[in-house]
Length: 324
Image (cartoon, rainbow, N blue to C red):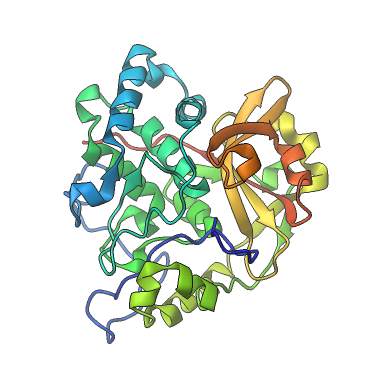
């Protein structure tokens, strides 16, 4: 989440001038159709240098070696994701790792430093990658799965508006494409409605390298946030989370709902089964917890630690298409 002291949503995503200039039409969520030839089987070179978009290659190779030795591919997707997450524990917490350029948007990963969102993204992308034959365990392959989860419709078109900034939209978009299921309502979650409004704040502009360089993106993000406000969102109040812990599965994406009125979530991590309970695995900025990726205590206990924690959203990732 942001280093700001405001109870802001998880918005460490970058911004960039929309292709075609100021007169181009706004790209609305859910409207893009993927041209033939693009998608799960198409690997493309990055728009920026490898040294910019792919950091921590030694760590990546270590993960590949462990995946091969321990046959991670044989595990179900949830267990596989949790296994990668545990292997990433100890990685330093570093924020704003996606602020990689003043203009150009490109899928990227940084195994040398992760924040809460990139921790779960990297874990899930790696889990999906190792289901492929080892010959596909490449930088291009990993960024392919990062792109699939991170960008609207699974495609980065080089612009800010193709990247999703709010977990509610990520979960909705990924579910529509068959990449998982938001199970919150089925776990007894209740409806929550808010007017999402963050990207036009001075805090968002100050913290984003891209927005600082092109404030014309702000009204476009406002329109996207208006769309996000129309999405149906369910959450499990924190007082009820202990009663459903036994139903959470390894690798579930656990999004922490905030009490802040202008957004939904403030933190995110992964579920890790521990007998009849579930522990919270996440990248924490807390100095008392080491500012690193950790396996924390029970998710129900974590929620009780802060009065600003309102509850939980649970997204269950599924398998993704293999690389063609």
